[in-house]
Image 1 (cartoon, rainbow, N blue to C red):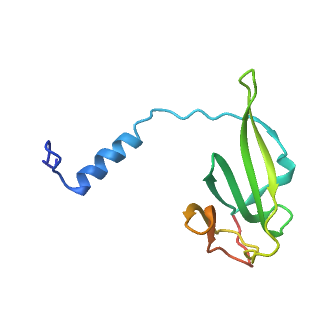
Image 2 (image 1 turned 90 degrees about the vertical axis):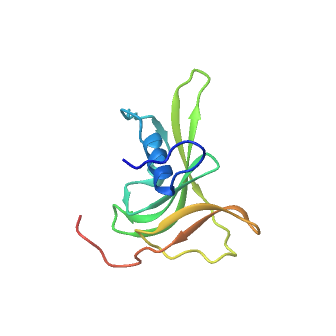
Length: 135
């Protein structure tokens, strides 16, 4: 369906469909369980927010297995040894005490962006600050 064709013409919908087909053309996903350092730092949590920035994964907040809601920031770095072995290293990130930290929350959204005033940064918004749900 949908005509269009050469010469750079075509609708945005045709472009979207062709882009979607390109992005989703893989045939399988292979899951790996790399060696993890510092896993006890992040613990088990649900409803946390995550974003990629500077080739690292950042995780914010969430509902911990202890029942507490947190506003901590964790960073996961992929480490590749000289032998090619892949591991993941977690580290708690200290936040600037002069800033205004976000509320303890779960279910928030986190995204990375470039600010003209702050450079590369993370933006957190939304979320639930109390209550619960049964999952």
